[in-house]
Image 1 (spheres, rainbow, N blue to C red):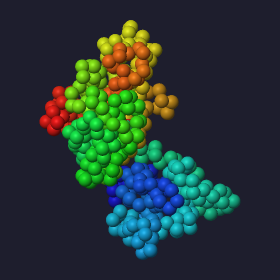
Image 2: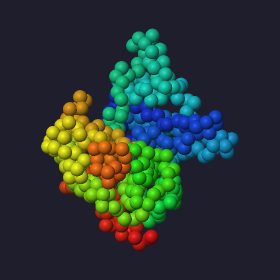
Image 3: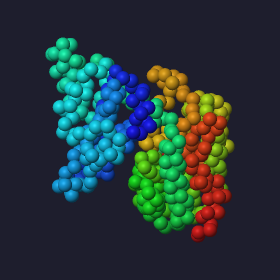
Length: 435
Ligand code: GLY
Ligand code: MN
Ligand code: MN
C-alpha cells in the first residue's frame, strides 16, 4: 500500500469511511474521447490509472481497509478500448485488500457506510455517485436508528488530501525533478531551433516531441508559444503565427511525468540577439524573478513574495519611463496592473495549479508561510500592450515572463529548473552556437 494511503487511513481514524472516485472519460465527439486524465486525489492515494473506479477506505476494518471497485476484465471491451487491470490486477498491482467489479458498488454501499460516524466524500464532483450516496442516506432515514446506521457527519476529504499533497515526499520530489529536467531540456531545444520565418506551431511540436520521447505522458497544460505581441496574451494557445525577425518568443510549457507537472517559461529573441529595449525589460523581469526565487524559503509568506514582485516591477516600470511618480503611490493605486496582472506563482505537483490552501484561515486574511516540501513556481512578467500610449514606443508589444519551479527546504530552497538557462548572455550564447 502507498505511504500516502497509509497516512490517509491514519488521519481519518477508525470511526470513518472514505469514498474517493476516479475520473471518467470525457467525450470529445460521438464515440471518441479526450485523452484520459486521472483524478489527482484518487491517483495520489491509489496510483490506479484507470477510469470509472472507486476507492473505499475503511480504517476500522483491519483485514480489509482498502476496497477498490474497478472495471472488470472483459475480452471484447479490452480488444476495442485497451487493457484493464480487473479485480485481480487491482489487488496484485495496486495493493487493494479487496477488489470488486464497479457494478457491485451500489449493493455494497450500505455495508460500507453503516456503522461509521463520519463519511469522507466530496459532493459536487461526480453527480451520479452523489445521487447514489444521497439516495441511500435518505432511504436510511425511514429506518430511524433501529438498524446500524450510516454516517451523520460528512467531511470533504480534500481538506486532508490537499494538505498532504502540498508537502511533497522525497519520492514525489524525485519525480518532479525528472519532470522539470525533461521540460528544461525541451526549452533549450526550442532556443536552439527557433529561427525567423518558422511557425510557433513548429516550436510547440519540438517541445512536445521531446516530452514524449523522454517518457512524459504529454503536457501538464496547453503549451503557450507566443511570438511578438502574442506574448502579451497570458493564455495564448493558438500557437500558429509566424516568428518574426526582431521579435521575442515567450514559451510557457511543462511536462506531465508519471502524474507530476513541471511549469517553465522562458522568453528569448527569435533571431538570437536581444534588442536594447527588449534587454532592458528582460533584465527587470529577471532580476525580480531571481529575487523571488531567493525569497521562496521557509517562514516567508506568499503575500510577501507577491508584494516583493510588485515593488520590483513597479520600480522597473519607472526606470523604463512607463510609470511615473512615487513608488508606494503607484503600488497603492495598482498602476502596475496594466503591465503585471497575475500572481507571482502557485503550488505545483500533480496539478499544474496544485492543491493546497494559500491562507492559514478560511477568511483568507492571513497569507500562508512557505514550509519545507512545498513546490512553488516563480513567474513574474511584464506585458506592454502593443497600443499602450503610456509606454515609450520601443517597449510596446513586448511580453516577457520567466518561470522556475522551486522546492522549499529546511534551510533554503532548490530550484528544480535551474538547468534551464535564463541569463540573457547564456541564451544568446546557446542560440549563437546553433545559428
Ligand atoms: N502555465 C500556467 C502557469 O504558468 O501558471
Ligand atoms: Mn507556466
Ligand atoms: Mn505557472
